[in-house]
Length: 116
Length: 116
Image (cartoon, rainbow over the protein chains, first blue to last red):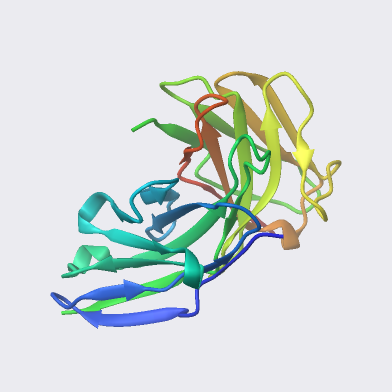
């Protein structure tokens, strides 16, 4: 069964500092990988996704993530965080339509706090 | 990007009553919609997959008679929590997929249900 692990429940960084949020997945085939951001009391916004091709994907708001098959990881990075980046971040894995596993499985989430 | 709305955004009800939550895709037709449940400080858990014109597919452990899902049109899916109890209090989020070949899901803003 597919699963996602986000090892860090809560991370605090200073504004302007770099950020890396970790995500490890377990999936039997080539995964479709996603990062979402959730502000308090709101739904999810897609930051970026990986389906195939270049393993370094660029997303919105200056985020990027790198797919490393050998490590089963899809870590999210940002070179310089802004106070507005404070939110909950979720990594998710899903299968392809062809594989019939269209459902998304989410990690536990990482809460990001930004110090001024 | 595509827009998905949910109504109501918040609802408080008495134990034993039923509550209906609507999920609408505003600018696209959604053949498939998903319903998730999120407990405080936890991840999203998929409850069911709703396909237009057919019965919903429920995840293991989700009571289909408790959580009634109707997907009567390509732009509307409803989740009815029947005979709600305090343990049903949660954040319910829907998502919609544009068409069969698209993997990307667009999430609604969520509905906060509180059962007294």
